[in-house]
Figure 1 (cartoon, rainbow over the protein chains, first blue to last red):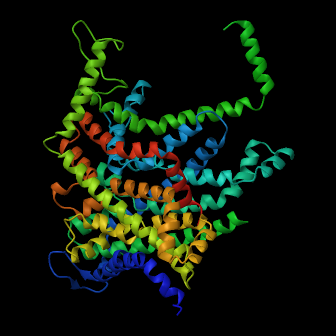
Figure 2 (figure 1 turned 90 degrees about the vertical axis):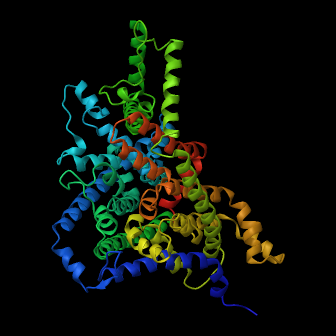
Figure 3 (figure 1 turned 45 degrees about the vertical axis):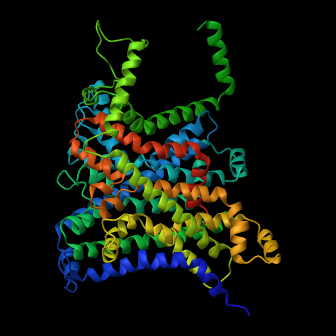
Length: 290
Length: 313
């Protein structure tokens, strides 16, 4: 009596399958349905067809938060890719204290969003914050970082660069996989330090660069807690992000139908980016196996 | 420095030529990076030791200062340090017994959610990981790709849809949405455990199977005992994830008696309107502390876990 392999495996996979359907597929399907409804949570939903999506197209705030979020996402993931690669490369040099610096760079990843927000609020405080106190010693009158339309978003981008520890770790592993012999033969051919980085390191870790870049894009496009806690999207909506707009529509303005339409667009974008990560990931397997 | 020694130093530098320069540059850059990345937390901690007036005063003073009879007590005096600890203790005690935030209650709530989530993910994810690593079935790789895909989905993207479901279930205003999903396995936990199970030699379970062990027997007697390090890492990650979760409690809880520490801190500093920064920072330090201690005790495991998640697929 032999049972087919799938039935043998089923009980083992069941917890995941139930969780996937119940906590991901069903909610996403429900929100697709509600995105075609006018739904305030207090009254029964009323079917309105494509009304919510049509409203999106003409909603200036929707375009505003989309622009803000794309700007943050591209700037922060681009800078984080460069910065974490540089830090990872520095950590591979054989000097004293690298393991301490490695730990220090990783710790912010573990810091809860609210604590991070509180710390940075204090650093950015225009009157007694550390940054402006330090600037005033240099005779510079620092701006009101989070209160100025010009500086608020860049301040969040800098704050995002504080949390690049996991991407540094991925690079560290990739850098250690680069065969020493490649560097040695490049040296013998008279290639200098920068040349070796440019012509050996970069091509060898490029899959990791792509992987990290897209991962950090996925995460930065859903920025919520820091602006929600620190600026409430201000000043003049310069730090109002897409996730905040979904949250406010769903839970503050009581417009769950509209929020569902917004959430659906976000799900589609995330899905597209995820497919890229998976494609890159496959190349990784190949690359590591080769 | 004498001329002779300076001469010697120059000789050395000349001798090492191309090596000392870059090394010194790397060391300096690393020192600057370490400093910059440490500042936000270290400074927050230092503020938590000050008086509320000093915390909100401009300047770069690192340590608290005290007025004394006949000027400030010296840093090297007993008087200074006794007042230092007196003030630090008063700040932290003030947070613990604050009338506007019930810290011990929030701590209990956070621990409850985190412990239930850790137990749930350990039990369910290890079972699922066995199914993905030790059993051969058609479509396994395709389904596993789906697991990987769900690993990338950020919480903020599905929070509003999840709310709709939990509302139907009557779970809003309870802790259930925060821990129940963990009992149906988490994608990254399954992934990490599967990767680890794959490194356990097949010969071990084949021997057990020949001795008449079922899959359940192999799982309980062979795989689980050998996977303690991976289980510990998965438990750690889940603990940190639950402990640090802000969006979940923000959306799914609605009474202050249910607040977790994250919500408590957000509410605490909002109510303070930015005034006693020393107390806000003390609260924040207490919230970070458990996670930081766990990290320092298990650094290697943490780092390996992240590297695995990022690289091997």
